[in-house]
Length: 92
Image 1: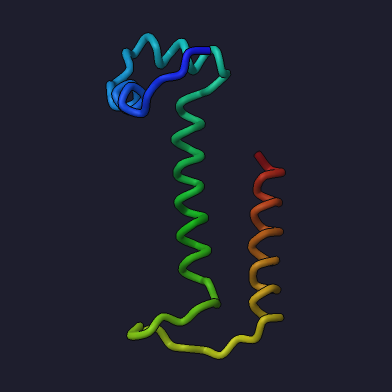
Image 2: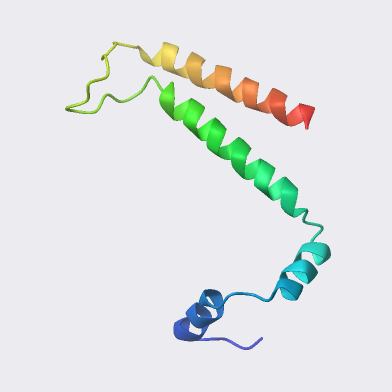
């Protein structure tokens, strides 16, 4: 296998791919573009949900109400979202 320099690799990645090449890549790897968009929306929604309800670190200078939560409550909160996420995956 030929090894490429970092410059060659960067140039390869920075060039836009032809539409035909993308379609060939998708069909060869059984990728459905609509599912990728759907997964992206799901991932962003899940990320927003977890970060907006995270009970962990309180940041200095934040206007958010600082509530004292012990480690057991943090773990239970995390486990709830983990179970919720796994149930969603089973539905897909």
